[in-house]
Every structure is written in C-alpha cells, then in structure tokens.
Length: 577
Image 1 (cartoon, rainbow, N blue to C red):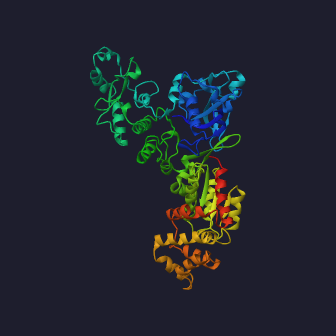
Image 2 (cartoon, rainbow, N blue to C red):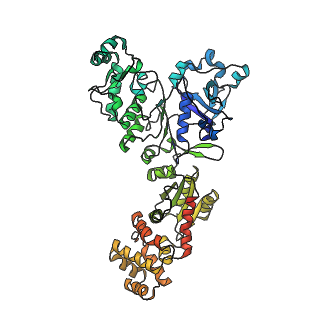
C-alpha cells in the first residue's frame, strides 16, 4: 500500500518550512519540547485523512500571518495500480528519485511513479485538497483524490481515545482487517427488547474472521480480553448505524473500557493485521499509558524489529525506553532554525548507536554536556542541586543533558561530542587536563561550534578541588573520603608521599594555621585520584561532595576555579530550553 516519500510543510503552526523525506518504515521524531514534532503528525493527518469537514483558525498559521497560506504537500509512492491509471491520473503522475529526494513533473527512467497531494488553507480558512502537477496546471486541469481513495489512504491515528477503532464504522481499523460486514437491521427490533445476546450469536458467524484476528492479536500482545472477542450491540448507542456494532470481551464488557495502554497496544496490533489495506500509522507520544515492557511490544507490533517494514509509522516520543528499542535509522531529530525546520536522521554510527543505548535521554534535550567521566557528572549534578536550592533553574529545566564518556581516552569525548554536533545539538565538553587530547581533534570540535572547559595546568578534578578549596573544605573532603573508604585513605596518602606525610600532619596544619601548603594540596590530589581506587570516583560520591562541600565553598575558594564552574552554568542558561 502507499508510502509517503516526501513531506513539505509551509506556514503551518510552529513550522515555517519543513522538507523531509521519511523512511518507508519507522519514523520516530525526537528532540526537545516545543520543536513541532506533533505538528508534523497533524499535518500528515490533515492532508491525507478522510475527513469531510476540517476546521482551521488563525492560530494554525505560522506567526498568525493569515496572508501567507498554509501549504502541506505529501508525495505518495508505492501506489496501487488503480491510482496509476493513465486515464484517471495521467497528467498528475510524477517521478520521485529516492537518492536525491527530487520530484520531477513527469516520470523518467529510474524514478518511482508518485502522486503529490496538497492541502492549502488561505485566509478564508477553507481547506482545499488537490493533486499537484505543473503539466496539469498549464492545462488548467484541477483534480483531487476520490473519496474511496482518500479512505483507502487515510492513516490510522493511535491516540488516547479508541472508541472509533473499536467499532465497525467507516475508516475504523476493524473494517480493514477483513471484508466481512454485519447487518444489524434484523436485530434492531429485538435490540429494544434487550437483544444484545441474540445479535451477538448472529454477529459471531458474520464476523468470525475479524473476531478471530482480534482475539489472536490481543493474546499475542498480552491484552486481556478473555478467551474470545465478541461483537454485540453497543448499549450506549442512541441511533443504529455502523458504529452500533462494537468490540466486547467474553463477558460482554465493551473493549473501549480497556486502559489507555491496552487500547493503544491492541489498535497497533490490529493495524499491523490490516497493513495490506492501509499502511500508514500515526502515534503521538507513543509511550503514553504504556509500561516499559509494553513500549517494546507496541513498537514490535508496528514492525520496528523487522527488516522489511510492514507499515510506515510516524511517531513522537520523550521516552528513553523507546529510544533504546529503536535503531538510529528509525530516529529523526527535529530541529528549528531561524527560517525552517530540519529532520536529521540519527544514524547507526558506532558513536551514535552506543550513546543511544547508554544515554538516550541526551537525545531528548536541547544541549549536551559531554563529561570525561563519572566524577564530572557527579560534580555538575551536585552543584546543580545546590543551585536549585538557592532558587536557580536546574540543568534539566534549562534543557541540558549530561553524558558520561567513561574516562581513560582523551579523544573519546570529542568523538561523542561530534556525533551530537552532527545532529544540531549544542555541545560542551568538560574534561581533565592531566592527559591532553589530540590538538587537531579538539580544534575541529571547537571550529564546529563546540565549547571546551578544562581544569587548569595539567590537573584532574581531584587536583583542582584540593588545590582550589579552602583548608576547611579540604578537611571536609578528607573526612568524607574516610567515611567512604576508612583506613585506605591513610595508606593512599603514605604511598603517594613516600611515607613523608600523614593524615594527622594534614589535620594539625589546618587546625593550627588555617592554611594548607601547595605541596600538601598536590599530594592530596594525587592520592584522591588513584586509578581504580579514587576517593570520589562515582557519580553518587562526587555528587555528595559537590552538593555539601564544593558548592558552599565556591564564594571563598580560588576564584579561577569558581569561574570555571560559573562558565558551565552560564553556557547552560544561554541555550534553548
């Protein structure tokens, strides 16, 4: 069945311009909030949906500018033979080149035969659907899709309400999973006399195939409707028509009473069964009402794990679970620039795919701080919590995600940072300076718009803390390390100092002079960052240090260190939210 090859949106709600060639399978739009992801789904639904009456208002125009019409054009490929008949669509048949995304007005060798359907809304707010063709326009020929073609192409929207798709009525997924139809007229008189059961016996025979598919699909997806679905007269119907007949479970309870998650899951499964009849699915906030394990089922039922896509699916999500379930080729970051939107395929490069698995939440933010290791993550999280207590906006509220590179390899943060840069994210790297990265690698990252913040003079984080904080704060660092590791702290200090320095000497120096020598600060920093035995080398440990010791000391400590931390949070505040 038909697939959307190209989407062109102009002056619709928050989108001034978008040109996007989606994949024939799963297309999951991600990115920060208010980037118009839902608007893309609405545009597809309005242009391709089978509706006789659609109401628009001034707020549907970009920037409320009603002098510039709304225009939504969908290029449709993989057409049924009936939609490529020359006698019906001859001058409207065009050519699409998948490798370039170019649509030519007349099909040529190597081009797929397509139709372009356009929805235009001018200041009179009256929508107009027409097929697009330069040849037809030159000849003064105007044509739109016949109603039967609109119904056939109409996408299934898996939303919160399932009443529509759980009734045998025009456009419902139930009318697409089989050709069977029930005749309710013979039961209408009895219906007034509590004849729901009588009709149920008739419908069981008339709709045997459809009910069997519903039952099997529910069992496959773990949706509990009993051992058998039934078709009964809906007692809530005021008038009798197509919607009079709806799905019930084996006890006679309407399936519209299912929970939101079960409803969406079952409709997705049924749409998969109806793929030969209608193959385009829309689902906004796919995770809504679904537990993590059911998100996996939902995506699986739409063909997310299959090599040959049974459906073309357009999704939006803010769920890290959903991102882990999908591959980079099924994810598209929707970005807004000053004049247009762009949908960038995430891709399956190693740096990208590994980051999706480890830090999916970063792809849902507007800005990313790539941290060399867990210590930097903990530092920023602890400072962030303290700042939040002081009335500042949190990093999360500023649309910033933190990504851990695992430490050890100096160039690794830049590879991960470049991966995010290629998708339009603002990226900062926060790193140690004890092992320096390749100069050309760092410069390339900076030239691409990245920001780098490093500790000073060859220092790692622990060196920076013990060199910068006040003596009292350094004593608190030592006490905290002893709480975590006990006598190991004394052993580390003796080893690093070649048995020339003890904890008692450090404590006596601080208590008697309220000072801490540069030599002793250096030894403490080296002891604290021992490989595989670092005093604070975990996110939670460093978060505690930063929140309770470092943050309260920033006003009193070395102001150059304070400036480094302020630079991080200023960069965060300057970005999109």
